[in-house]
Image (cartoon, rainbow, N blue to C red; front, top):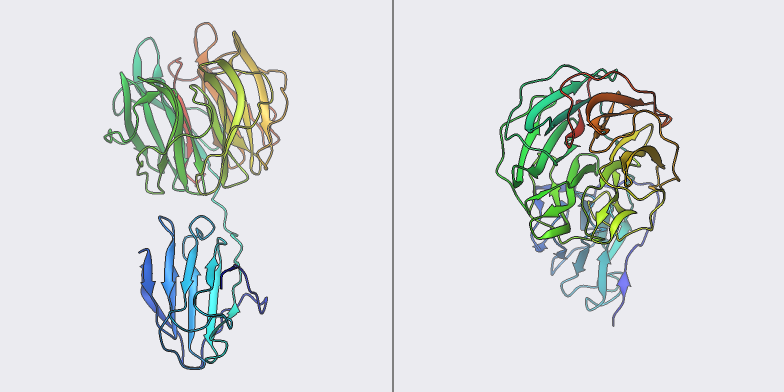
Length: 420
């Protein structure tokens, strides 16, 4: 007999009941591809890296209970498979395929008898309620001020940019930056020449020394946070040409090896978060010229295929989150410098062009600040500038504010700190 059991809810309370004998929770987080479980035990099942086959006991007594919990909310990516090990499962022989593939699921099974075997008492899905604390401050860093530099400028929770801070790490340009870990940031990749080095930024805005690079060395990638506390770098121009590879960043700031690219290989796109835990890459230049296409990123860091572009194709732009789960792409090079913007809804839908505000420019940076606002700053308007344009929590871009710090282009920016 074959088939798939995916969801069998007996009750909707969301409460995992304890057995009459009491339930003992296994101290270890299960990550191996197979595990044999015991009756009257609970297990945390982490399928972040692989599917896991759960082998039930070969013998059981009426009332024996086993509880399995989706530890990392990844069963939707890598499922669990139940091997009933000679006993029946809901009355079916153990040749019946039983799998659970919903993120956030918990499975509570009780043994009945030899006729029906293991029966799910409940397999509820817990909603993902927490949201990352809003980013309060920001940092602009690195770039070209006539030569490559590593200076940084901090932005407070009111959007005020501070004077230059002496640079840390390898001076470079054409890099990317993003938030990660709720309240920290990371600069990575860039040109000095092609490199993949990174520099972590703590929640006080202090930039750390170089970390040896991981992944394809490249220039003008984009970077963005996803999943509440993780991030990724994607796309760019490598020595071999345009690429679409991505590199995931853990919530500890560790950059992973290349992930095979999805979507059109291109350079100089921008990226921002939307919907609180998802992200979007957009625009850039490919071998066929400037594009306006986008690629959505799930809350597990999976990049989706191309979505037909909206708005004017351009590259060397910037993007930031604002409001509640919304984003904005702005400025860039359309063949000439531009100040137009495109808003992104909390579902990742890009809107048509909005007439530009402020000095048209390209090769600038953008970041979130103040919990629900954004800032565009620096760039090349025909000459290097340090001016800024604030974005309110409705996505309205304000007029130019006189710049602070060294005028430069091809820099990067990211939010940090959950404390105002």
